[in-house]
Amino acid sequence: MSKWWQERVVYQIYPRSFQDTNGDGIGDIPGIISRLDLLKDLGIGIIWLSPVYPSPNADYGYDISDYKGIHPDFGTMADMEKLIAEAEKRDIKIIMDLVINHTSDEHPWFQASRDKASPYRDYYIWRPGRESPGPGRQGKPPNNWTSFFGEGAWEYDEKSGEYYLHLFAKKQPDLNWHNPKVFEEVKDIMRFWLDKGIAGFRCDVINILYKTSLKDGRKKLALTGSEYYLSQEGTHEILRRLRREVLDSYDCFTVGETVFVTTETAKDLCGQDRGELDMIFSFEHMETDQYFVKWFKRKFHAGRFARTITKWQQAIDWNANYLENHDQPRCVSRFGDDEKFWDKSAKLLCILLLTLKGTPFIYQGQEIGMTNFDFTSMDEIRDVESHNIYRLAEKLHFPARVRWNMIRATSRDNARTPMQWDAGPGAGFTAGEPWLGINKNHEVINMAAQLDDPASIRSLYKAMIRIRNMSDILKYGSFEPLKITRRLFAYKRVLDGKALTILLNFSSSCVNTGFTGEALLSNYADKFDTDALDRPGTAFAGRLRPWEAVILKAGDAR
Image (cartoon, rainbow, N blue to C red; front, side, top):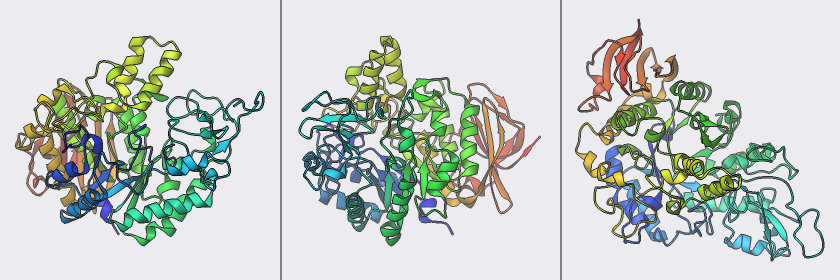
């Protein structure tokens, strides 16, 4: 039996960059409310809201100082309650970020834990330095672990006289999941928001909660020590208990951000018989254009990309499908051609996303083809991860041009530039000074320019969402690969003997696919017919134009 979250399309909002209503240059909750009708018109059924909790913003909301509050930058709790209510009127459900691997170092729990006698001491992972040269000296860090942000994973606290563990920024101390009180605190937080009417959680870095040991790790280029916290059995038990003791009492779902998972370890996290997560975000397809870590890019290869997507489509019962988010560069700049074939490649990626098996996740601005930023220096970058990596690369004597190219291609700020609503000075995002620079191409790429254009990227997203909503084949059908080359990705979705074939040309040259049939939809159309699947198509002779995507009724191989 299908679940409601399998039948809806999710839209991720990064509140800080979505819509500002008070002129302070920062997006806010009233701004989200003001755009709900546009989201409803697009066909969105779920909003994933990135953190709106109080935070010092060392990592822009993923360092939480109060799990039951709203950051004043975004509004008030009354605003949040109104957002939930107004979304419900439009049959849009809301899920929130659940960040429970770490808190902010300004959270009251952490501040209290700096006192060794405090009952909150064991809420975090504190250890004395090793090989201390004498009383009052900090010594060396407790082990050799390194963090996700390219620095050591331990920070010395003068007041406490010990080190605390942080797998992310130093202002994000890790919680101690060996302490039962931490578990009870998190259950209380989850119930607080579920009782307010939210429909579930996107669970941040959820497969690294439980640290099995604090031994030195095997030295690696990145994430030394990860063998002691990646997808440990203790984490699985935490997830099962959260399911049994909290989530099963609500009509809700969870999607987990899970790092360094394989298809096999993913099944342990989201298998239907596991009682843990409902689905997960995997990263393998997002790693096909890099060498080992995301900062070392290699040329995009459509075949490698398609084979990875195919592997996950076939191995996992229900995927969380995405091509970009607040942590990833813009997909049209990464997997498409954001210059000569910007329009066509953005539309191709739309058809790919909305014809895969699983729940589609669209990131704000993706529906109008927003591209990577056009910044020119580190002075314009706000992302803490980018600055840490830049400093590390400088320490390793990487040339300045190499350092900048690393950041330009991979920085999380690529996706965090403000939403481009119109061609005006503030892009319709703000009347003030934006917290992060607005891409100059907003004068051409913006919502206002696409809303009434039947051939726009946004119009195709709207049509494809409606087509998916009406098609049992696209919602529930099996995924079967047909042909993968350096340029062509061909697959079909099959249900009860009926099929749809999807042909995608990831290149600026024409491709002979070897398939013929009745074309129901192409991204080259001047208008996108939302009833396309119920009407006769046009003959397709097998040749795809540059960056063309075609959906065929059945489809025959020649």
